[in-house]
Image (cartoon, rainbow, N blue to C red; front, side):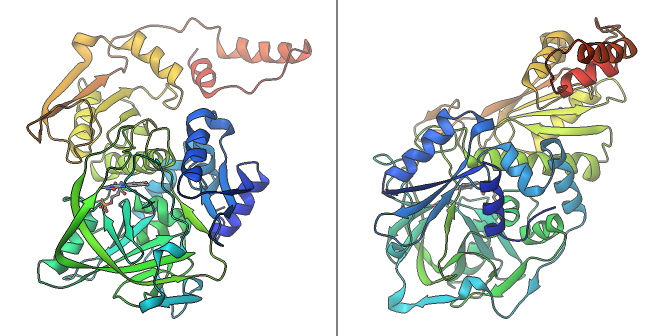
Length: 481
Ligand SMILES: Cc1cc2nc3c(=O)[nH]c(=O)nc-3n(C[C@H](O)[C@H](O)[C@H](O)COP(=O)(O)O)c2cc1C
């Protein structure tokens, strides 16, 4: 079951030891970002917790970070499933989207700040890599709309706080947020744009889903929640925003106006380049009474942004393979959590139906996504268990026979540090597809039969040996023995 609101989710995470309150007074300009870095860089994933900073110096709004993706367990808990049930949730939602419900009022507008009351300095916006990032950054979902169709889009585009009344949004050409704002500015119109802080986590996960042009992530979020997301009209611009968000920042982009964006620490783990990006003039800030500033931690992986993007987009790719391409023998998809979710390594479990089938699937994923490495294994491999995947690679993969290199690939986000930049121009990169399925018969496993292992399990218990939970890897192997 998925809880109804972010606030209920925070309580649930705290009760389960997945969220910890920090009562010490902390400085938003350096300390919060650094404490979050310790949580992600030093604490093992199974022990990682979201951080609820109750006292932020100079602010009366608390800050929560990590509540959406401190770990796979946190993400799965919010969706009410075990980690290997996450893809099915996205698959079902993508096949059964539910449109939003327009409502007349929402808690996100309990307080409305307009005109001279607008001030981003009222909000505790973290500087994530102090001393290196140009300043504080907003890292929460952004809503834009298409001037011609009226369709809205939700994506996350990090946003530099320029001063109390304006920001610079990292709207990248090719991204739907950028394309939407151009449908206004190309006509000489102001483009409406809004940042949503503390919307239901499912809305925020959906914002990171790489979907076809024109898709509305709010409908997919509705599909996950199995109920419409309630939207209310923004106060100063023509956009609909989630009624239950904690805080909404509304603004407008004026045609042609840009300013410096960056440096900012990238998901790849390095400081990103500086570029000119659209300036946004803030037109209103609305919020709940006593709001919470809930942000996503990005930058050096492992990070919350990478975990969330990997888990969400694995489901999107699984749905694409199984339903858009009709490849129903694909059973599972995993995207590794070390590199922003989509330039990373995908592992696909499938049953090949004909020679070359696994490589074909790998090539399709390589061509349709920014993923750089795609490994295909049989369905008797637990793709979330790196030991098991390594075993498949060692036992079923012959490099010269089972590798395919895809040359001359342009990585649109230009974020792969392994690709050289010459005279300001980024070179082309490559991708690799690895077929680690059993392409030749390898015979029987060197394990006793399933019956004998089951009998031995009874004997283990009779002997009073220590209890253990059977890993999926062992279950899959014994099943085949
Ligand atoms: C915390 C966070 C920050 C992100 N920042 C950016 C960004 O600055 N620019 C970008 O293009 N994508 C960024 N992404 C990834 C996009 O949000 C994601 O790919 C999304 O699907 C893009 O939406 P669109 O395809 O509808 O444009 C970020 C993701 C997260 C979780």
